[in-house]
Length: 238
Image 1 (tube, rainbow, N blue to C red):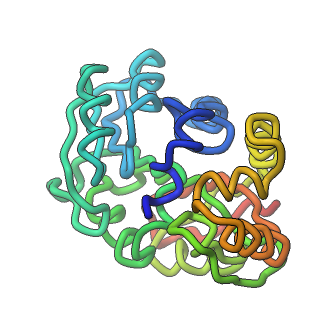
Image 2: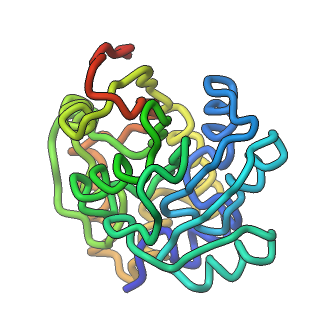
């Protein structure tokens, strides 16, 4: 079975920016950080729509990293330089970028290993921007498909991982409303969330299991901005 973000039901509703809220959190990033002239790496870039938006906003050199060649081919059509590699082993030099973006892909990786790589390739005081799913209930559950929901952790765990890797959290925002709006789009398209999950998994039992996992974990969506610094560990809380 394909990972959730590669499944046809998801791509039908989210054809380009394959994540909750589309480009809204990328635009939010651009409100918080001046991207002008920055060298940007997008780890888990997908079709590179975020990098295209940052280019329009004045960003400098751009590089997209992803494991899916089909998505990278779409990125290439946008004129974005890409590489096929896992984010735990980025094919990049030390201190080569001053903004690293990871949108709804971090949970699909070994998060600690990825953070170590993010810190390695970022310049001192470079920006790390992560958006992903978290568990609002603080609980975990078994999901019937590979997805960012399956590794969702409470925000306290995310804070510990990021600061423990040597980053200083500057902002941490709750954007769960965008996740709910995306869920509503799936309901509109497929009649219900269970109908959506049945299209994804191919059977009713797995669809019910996915809905049960959702009820148990209460998925939310966060946006985190951090600096590559081990000196100041101040955070902006929700």
